[in-house]
Image 1 (cartoon, rainbow, N blue to C red):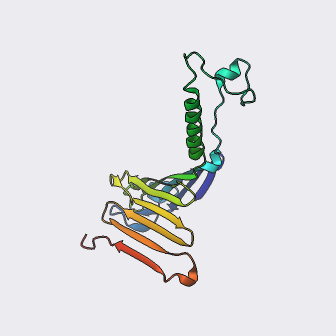
Image 2 (image 1 turned 60 degrees about the vertical axis):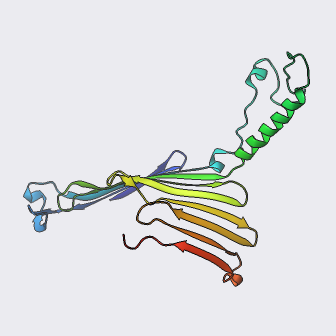
Image 3 (image 1 turned 180 degrees about the vertical axis):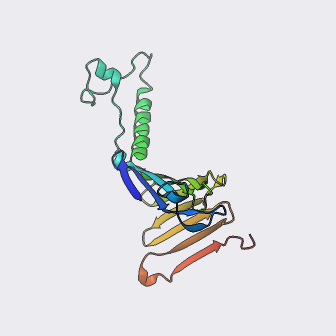
Length: 226
């Protein structure tokens, strides 16, 4: 049996599945030629089940315009734009700092615009698996995973992925990624900071497939002794 659905504007995907067996098992957990219902059980017995959920979100789905209006100005019948100029604090003794305030506002606007224009994506996933094929009735997998990417600029991209295994009480495969667009060249670096698969890989080369041999790469392999 399998089933699936999406909710929250198709951002959350839910998939469930289960397997059933009409035959019974003996005291040693071995499947025997006897119907489960005739052995004191139900019509079928569930041998496994799983549920997988994933939630994805990105900057485009939320929209990049996070500007806020001046609520105090609007509550007094003002306008949300600066058609009649921006309000100034005239309680100071001099006007020497007005230019500094304008420059500070412009700087803050530039920072806010940069943050609002950053492209990013994030994914959260959870996987749970139940096993009962030999009558063990155990949770074999219970993991929460997440991954994301962040475009710091048009040519710089960073990303990472990790998770936590609630069954084995430890972090899952963790990786950090850095990518740089060098116009006709590209450069990337990936790093697995811990676990038995601890390693890193660096690459720089030409994008064109005809000149793909013009490259330099170096890697640190995981310790095979582990």
